[in-house]
Image 1 (cartoon, one colour):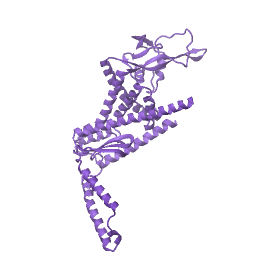
Image 2 (cartoon, rainbow, N blue to C red; image 1 turned 135 degrees about the vertical axis):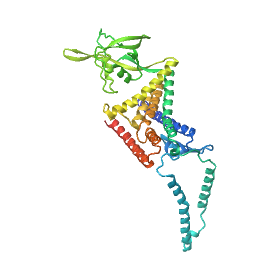
Image 3 (cartoon, one colour; image 1 turned 180 degrees about the vertical axis):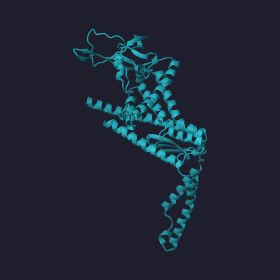
Image 4 (spheres, rainbow, N blue to C red; image 1 turned 180 degrees about the horizontal axis):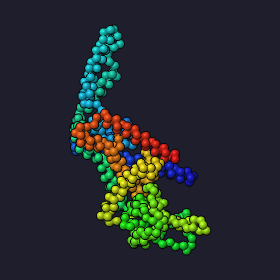
Length: 439
């Protein structure tokens, strides 16, 4: 019975975690599109729809003031702000010609229908059924209701000057970053700034009477050689290139007081990539091997446990900005190391991996929830500004080229490039997810 209850609790925790992950992703996408929407409204763009989610609409409401359609759609993993004429691949004249053809086609169909009636097909002369009459009345009523709403005002997306389009395009990423920064400030103020504390490991018992200089269990590490530590990559950067025997000054909290501890490195610190955390443990003497009877034996094994420290108001604001910059830098650094081959593609993750990791982190407490939400927000901000086809960054590049050339690149070419980019990104997302779970 107890096993069944524990299993049920585990399943519910997993479901709750996935739900929280979806909420975080949906909130970040919505705030991104809201950034486009606000900038577009302020700069006079014609916006036809603002949607949360994709697929069939669960709820739709058109604004009586602006004429913009607001929709909540079935698939909660996306959203969009639809600008009139943003992804057009046909000229206005072609659109107008198509609109002019419709009445002509209707007249032709009506003429053909009359000819059939004259030819003796008595069935077509029957009075329309009640159902057909009701459908006609319903359509007329819907048309009348539609006419009650104003036509969305503003200029088409591609008719706006390039500088306005650039502002609208970067507004989404800006909103993602601002929300992430707010979450970081909230986390640092309410819970504290994440740091690491040295702790004994349950997996290893040190020999009696054996002592080591430098860092000790219970030390909360704040700085190395004057560099504030926010992430493990900061530890790597502070130590990288130093040799065995070099001395670094480590600011720690020991016995409730801040003090600087000189630490003589136990090993060379040559960082291979951002996932190489072993260099931290070996160089700082948290993991030590000694040669005994010609064989290397483990004589010390300490771990780093995540903790938090709270600062004053102004230090909290300053640390929040720096932490947000560090998160953005880690995104660019991981992409750079992926391109150069320093890390494998398995280190990346697609939508499924993202939801899985987010679900696990979101259920580990309030601080973890805020931290993963902020990380996703910064990731979206940085990733969307990359000059990759289909992303906002690539569209900004097209606008800059148009601004310099005084004329746009062929819209059909731009549309094809963005379409190829979408296919590539979707394929890449599926690939990294498969490799993450298979390898």
